Image 1 (tube, rainbow, N blue to C red):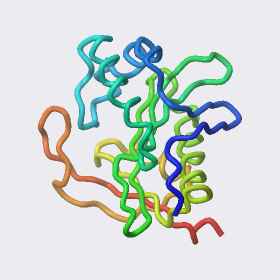
Image 2: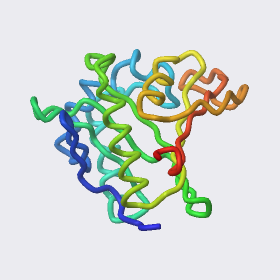
Image 3: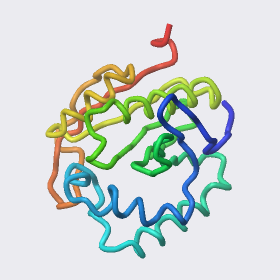
Length: 184
Protein backbone atom coordinates (compact mmCIF):
# COMPACT_ATOMS: atom_id res chain seq x y z
CA UNK A 1 0.00 0.00 0.00
CA UNK A 2 1.24 3.47 -0.91
CA UNK A 3 0.49 6.41 1.35
CA UNK A 4 0.27 9.18 -1.23
CA UNK A 5 -2.34 11.56 0.17
CA UNK A 6 -4.49 13.85 -1.94
CA UNK A 7 -3.05 14.24 -5.43
CA UNK A 8 -4.53 16.11 -8.38
CA UNK A 9 -6.77 13.96 -10.61
CA UNK A 10 -8.37 14.83 -13.94
CA UNK A 11 -11.26 13.40 -15.92
CA UNK A 12 -12.85 14.58 -19.15
CA UNK A 13 -14.90 17.25 -17.35
CA UNK A 14 -13.35 17.56 -13.92
CA UNK A 15 -10.29 18.50 -11.93
CA UNK A 16 -10.09 16.92 -8.49
CA UNK A 17 -7.56 18.79 -6.40
CA UNK A 18 -6.70 19.92 -2.91
CA UNK A 19 -8.85 22.63 -1.42
CA UNK A 20 -7.54 26.19 -1.14
CA UNK A 21 -8.89 28.84 1.24
CA UNK A 22 -10.01 30.78 -1.86
CA UNK A 23 -12.57 27.99 -2.50
CA UNK A 24 -14.59 29.00 0.59
CA UNK A 25 -17.02 31.38 -1.13
CA UNK A 26 -17.90 28.94 -3.92
CA UNK A 27 -18.13 26.02 -1.49
CA UNK A 28 -20.47 27.96 0.75
CA UNK A 29 -22.60 29.29 -2.11
CA UNK A 30 -22.70 26.15 -4.27
CA UNK A 31 -23.30 23.39 -1.74
CA UNK A 32 -22.29 23.84 1.90
CA UNK A 33 -25.12 26.28 2.74
CA UNK A 34 -27.83 24.36 0.88
CA UNK A 35 -30.28 22.44 3.08
CA UNK A 36 -31.30 20.32 0.07
CA UNK A 37 -27.69 19.18 -0.45
CA UNK A 38 -27.19 18.36 3.25
CA UNK A 39 -30.64 16.80 3.73
CA UNK A 40 -29.26 13.26 3.95
CA UNK A 41 -25.83 14.11 5.38
CA UNK A 42 -24.47 14.05 8.92
CA UNK A 43 -23.55 17.75 8.92
CA UNK A 44 -25.87 20.75 8.85
CA UNK A 45 -25.70 23.57 6.30
CA UNK A 46 -22.96 26.08 7.05
CA UNK A 47 -24.27 29.28 8.66
CA UNK A 48 -21.94 31.60 6.71
CA UNK A 49 -18.86 31.71 4.47
CA UNK A 50 -16.57 32.39 7.43
CA UNK A 51 -17.57 29.03 8.89
CA UNK A 52 -16.70 27.39 5.57
CA UNK A 53 -13.39 29.26 5.42
CA UNK A 54 -12.42 28.04 8.92
CA UNK A 55 -13.31 24.45 8.00
CA UNK A 56 -11.18 24.69 4.87
CA UNK A 57 -8.23 25.92 6.93
CA UNK A 58 -8.58 22.79 9.11
CA UNK A 59 -8.78 20.53 6.07
CA UNK A 60 -5.83 22.20 4.34
CA UNK A 61 -3.66 21.69 7.43
CA UNK A 62 -4.26 17.93 7.12
CA UNK A 63 -2.81 17.66 3.60
CA UNK A 64 0.62 16.94 5.10
CA UNK A 65 -0.80 13.59 6.28
CA UNK A 66 -0.32 10.98 3.54
CA UNK A 67 -3.42 9.13 4.76
CA UNK A 68 -5.64 12.18 4.17
CA UNK A 69 -7.65 12.14 0.94
CA UNK A 70 -9.97 15.10 0.36
CA UNK A 71 -10.66 16.61 -3.05
CA UNK A 72 -12.62 19.61 -4.23
CA UNK A 73 -14.46 18.93 -7.48
CA UNK A 74 -13.86 21.65 -10.06
CA UNK A 75 -15.54 21.89 -13.46
CA UNK A 76 -12.80 22.27 -16.06
CA UNK A 77 -15.02 24.23 -18.43
CA UNK A 78 -16.00 26.89 -15.87
CA UNK A 79 -13.15 26.74 -13.36
CA UNK A 80 -15.79 26.64 -10.63
CA UNK A 81 -15.80 24.38 -7.57
CA UNK A 82 -19.05 22.46 -7.30
CA UNK A 83 -18.52 19.66 -4.78
CA UNK A 84 -16.36 17.55 -2.54
CA UNK A 85 -15.30 13.90 -2.43
CA UNK A 86 -13.15 12.39 0.30
CA UNK A 87 -12.08 9.32 2.18
CA UNK A 88 -14.09 9.52 5.39
CA UNK A 89 -12.64 6.35 6.88
CA UNK A 90 -9.38 4.63 6.08
CA UNK A 91 -8.49 1.13 7.33
CA UNK A 92 -4.90 0.29 6.55
CA UNK A 93 -5.23 -3.12 8.21
CA UNK A 94 -7.59 -4.38 5.49
CA UNK A 95 -6.48 -1.95 2.75
CA UNK A 96 -9.89 -0.30 2.57
CA UNK A 97 -11.44 3.15 2.35
CA UNK A 98 -14.92 4.55 2.79
CA UNK A 99 -15.85 7.46 0.52
CA UNK A 100 -18.19 10.38 1.14
CA UNK A 101 -19.28 13.04 -1.31
CA UNK A 102 -21.65 15.94 -1.94
CA UNK A 103 -22.23 18.38 -4.77
CA UNK A 104 -24.18 21.47 -5.78
CA UNK A 105 -27.74 20.50 -6.70
CA UNK A 106 -27.36 22.55 -9.90
CA UNK A 107 -25.23 19.71 -11.25
CA UNK A 108 -27.22 16.69 -10.04
CA UNK A 109 -28.29 14.17 -12.65
CA UNK A 110 -25.44 14.90 -15.10
CA UNK A 111 -23.14 11.99 -14.21
CA UNK A 112 -20.57 14.33 -12.67
CA UNK A 113 -20.42 12.69 -9.25
CA UNK A 114 -20.15 9.20 -10.75
CA UNK A 115 -17.27 10.49 -12.89
CA UNK A 116 -15.53 11.91 -9.82
CA UNK A 117 -16.16 8.73 -7.82
CA UNK A 118 -14.72 6.54 -10.61
CA UNK A 119 -11.59 8.71 -10.70
CA UNK A 120 -11.12 8.42 -6.93
CA UNK A 121 -11.75 4.65 -7.01
CA UNK A 122 -9.15 4.26 -9.79
CA UNK A 123 -6.65 6.34 -7.82
CA UNK A 124 -7.22 4.37 -4.62
CA UNK A 125 -6.79 1.04 -6.42
CA UNK A 126 -4.04 1.91 -8.91
CA UNK A 127 -1.88 4.36 -6.96
CA UNK A 128 -2.64 3.81 -3.27
CA UNK A 129 -3.07 0.07 -3.95
CA UNK A 130 -6.12 -0.49 -1.77
CA UNK A 131 -8.21 -3.63 -2.11
CA UNK A 132 -11.66 -2.28 -1.18
CA UNK A 133 -13.56 0.98 -1.59
CA UNK A 134 -17.00 1.37 -0.01
CA UNK A 135 -19.63 4.05 0.43
CA UNK A 136 -23.02 4.27 2.07
CA UNK A 137 -26.12 6.41 1.83
CA UNK A 138 -29.31 7.08 3.72
CA UNK A 139 -31.96 4.58 2.61
CA UNK A 140 -34.13 7.58 1.65
CA UNK A 141 -31.48 8.90 -0.76
CA UNK A 142 -31.64 6.33 -3.56
CA UNK A 143 -30.05 8.74 -6.04
CA UNK A 144 -26.77 8.49 -4.14
CA UNK A 145 -26.94 4.71 -4.50
CA UNK A 146 -27.35 5.09 -8.26
CA UNK A 147 -24.17 7.20 -8.33
CA UNK A 148 -22.34 4.36 -6.58
CA UNK A 149 -23.69 1.78 -9.03
CA UNK A 150 -22.73 3.94 -12.04
CA UNK A 151 -19.20 4.08 -10.62
CA UNK A 152 -19.06 0.27 -10.59
CA UNK A 153 -19.90 -0.40 -6.96
CA UNK A 154 -22.10 -3.33 -5.98
CA UNK A 155 -24.92 -3.27 -3.46
CA UNK A 156 -23.88 -5.05 -0.26
CA UNK A 157 -26.90 -4.50 1.96
CA UNK A 158 -28.68 -2.32 4.46
CA UNK A 159 -27.71 -1.84 8.08
CA UNK A 160 -30.77 -0.77 10.02
CA UNK A 161 -30.67 2.30 12.28
CA UNK A 162 -26.90 2.75 12.00
CA UNK A 163 -26.73 6.40 10.94
CA UNK A 164 -27.88 9.70 12.38
CA UNK A 165 -28.46 12.66 10.07
CA UNK A 166 -27.87 16.33 10.79
CA UNK A 167 -31.35 16.63 12.31
CA UNK A 168 -30.56 13.87 14.81
CA UNK A 169 -32.84 11.32 13.14
CA UNK A 170 -31.71 7.69 12.93
CA UNK A 171 -31.66 6.17 9.46
CA UNK A 172 -30.77 2.92 7.72
CA UNK A 173 -27.45 2.91 5.84
CA UNK A 174 -27.30 1.24 2.42
CA UNK A 175 -23.78 0.02 1.63
CA UNK A 176 -22.09 -0.39 -1.74
CA UNK A 177 -18.52 -1.45 -2.45
CA UNK A 178 -16.05 -2.42 -5.10
CA UNK A 179 -13.01 -4.59 -4.58
CA UNK A 180 -9.96 -4.63 -6.80
CA UNK A 181 -10.83 -7.99 -8.35
CA UNK A 182 -14.25 -6.63 -9.46
CA UNK A 183 -12.47 -4.50 -12.03
CA UNK A 184 -11.46 -7.47 -14.15
